[in-house]
Image (tube, rainbow, N blue to C red; front, side, top):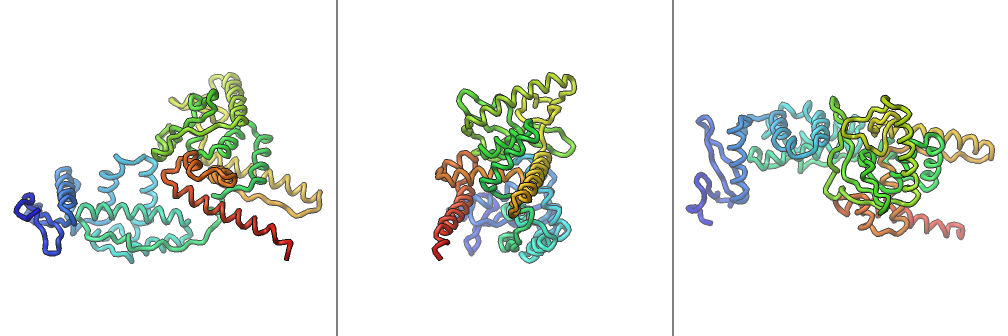
Length: 394
């Protein structure tokens, strides 16, 4: 396309890039792009922001000001409410460091300072990575809108964080741990124990399990339909929101033992509801949940985590008695988070030779990469077990 045939106000620079000019309050501004399509989009975005009163001059806008625009125009109407909350949480670490800086003045070392400070304050590697991703989205959109020329986040690096206690809790249980935990949970509080049997046998996310309704359980086809996740936002009541990704909406097979437990669970829930009468108080719109509190309310992930901790403590107390009686070394179980049930399911499935692609479909992973990371770890563990078989020869 020659320059004469370009849209009005757009031209080609000597370096091959396209540029578009516009005027605001008597001052001219220039937008650059590698393609005509790119520069036209940036120009449309700038005009939209001017028309809607959210535009700030590129050379004056601060990181804080742009963050507010980005959040309102590019996040709140695009992603789930819980994702927006996560972005806001991450930005709390960004604001004190670079919030008042001009967007165009931020360099990679400023971004690195944010990440390094988070490491020094003891935050987990995954949380630091989430914060970097949030910053990357903020600055990438500024790049797309022609406010900055380069994205400084791309040249930052994630600091190496040693695996801490919070990371070890998100792990796969051994077969002994899994079996021992389930037996103990079933003895202590059978009404709550079934949630763990479902978690370890399906690999569902805890939010998906908490959002299960009886209509999602197909006893005839022995299937569980995953179509939502339980969401609780501060100041608002529980509601069943959409699943994490498109692949997360799925159907998982239900084992006969799990079907039997869920049938019994349904009967026990009905008896409890009749016994409590008016005290059975479900949230409106969530009257038919599979797993609830003793009064019909949705379960909180935090509550599930607390019950895991108390059950693990009970397991260890019993183990201490047995070890003392049998004059042997203690076999202590480390606690774990609800997500570990999902990771444990994937590990058991891969250990037994189920193809990674099938495991991916069970878990609802958006890409095979996440499943393969687990597969690589499981394979390495199995290889170590195999080599131990010849240890007695040396």
